[in-house]
Length: 247
Image 1 (spheres, rainbow, N blue to C red):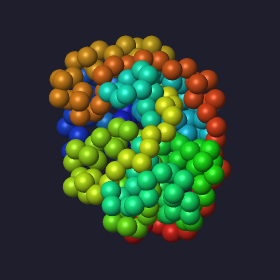
Image 2 (tube, rainbow, N blue to C red; image 1 turned 60 degrees about the vertical axis):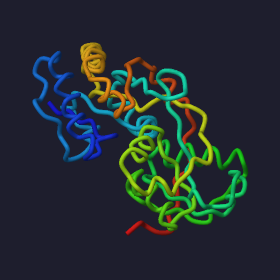
Image 3 (spheres, rainbow, N blue to C red; image 1 turned 45 degrees about the vertical axis):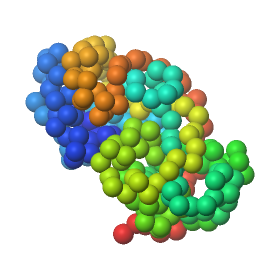
Image 4 (cartoon, rainbow, N blue to C red; image 1 turned 30 degrees about the vertical axis):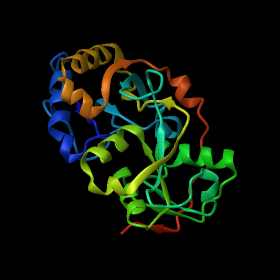
């Protein structure tokens, strides 16, 4: 059996993530002792537990995995949802999203809800076209690209943004331009055919067993359930066309 918790597994939070898994596995017979960190393993038939972004779930995973649960984050939005923070440089004189027509957008992944789909949705609503897309590989790298002037904007999921503000000095050079509408939070998943209920129960007990500091760092306060239909109802954006890749 395989378990991964890859979505917020920054080095600074690794000890907390490992403790979270230890608390989860206490209530799961036969669960692996340690987390796998050699890939996402989303399509592995031996997957016991992982977490995925909602865009890959609705574009390629929904027939092969089951949703176990949805995190409730310490965010100003309904339980079981999160939002994207669209980020600009603090010293950029442009104030409204409309001012960023023809801006350079840093994107962590073409299958990222917050890094691509949410920003594309806001751009379409506001009639904004980007002049170029920079593929960065991570939310942290996207934020660094904006801070360093390689890009003008990026979309960061709210939990990643809270971690960047906590640990990265370049966060002082950034500001939130706007927040996207909330969408369902990144779901916990298991291979299709596994019973999600014991996993959901183990997650609930583990979250409540974390210390206040650990919950604060993970921005994680509870566990709920959002059905698959609420994820698949979200629009699927066009595939981004990248002009360059961050070095």
